[in-house]
Image (cartoon, rainbow, N blue to C red; front, side):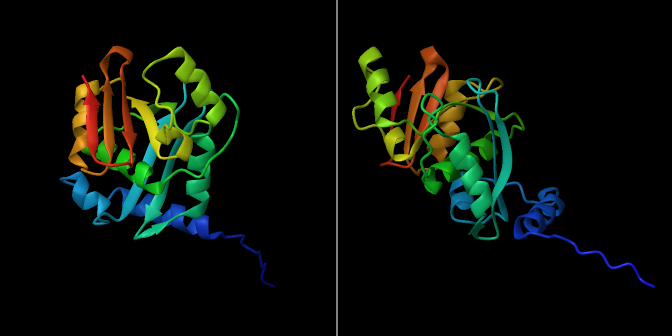
Length: 189
């Protein structure tokens, strides 16, 4: 008699297994522009939130396809932590973040300071600071404010600028870099 067991294999499980085996053999990308054009086999994002204590380390793109479940996890992670509102993040912003991280050649996760912001949160922050835009791209799910302990604001912003793919703001006094998928521009010191 043979013992027949049913295996519950999901598409995500297969992709994770594939990614785990290819991650070690994945090429090192020499520039972000090539990475953003899809020359890489995988795209991965690593972040943690000092506000919620949550962490995420996920491969969200393999061989030209975004992994829906991983993207949903990223959206949830990047929610407005003040209101718990979740917005679908613009994948171009996630790609810029991942490409910049790759250029920095670090394994340390980003500290996410701000991803999606609800209009209510944005209005509250705007009332407290002149540095918050009335029509912030954070409210559209198109921006993130990030920090790395082992890289300076200048290093992170240079990596993001190398992507030539959106806005990069340097906030040296507050020790973070703003990245978005809006028009290519830069500001700050």
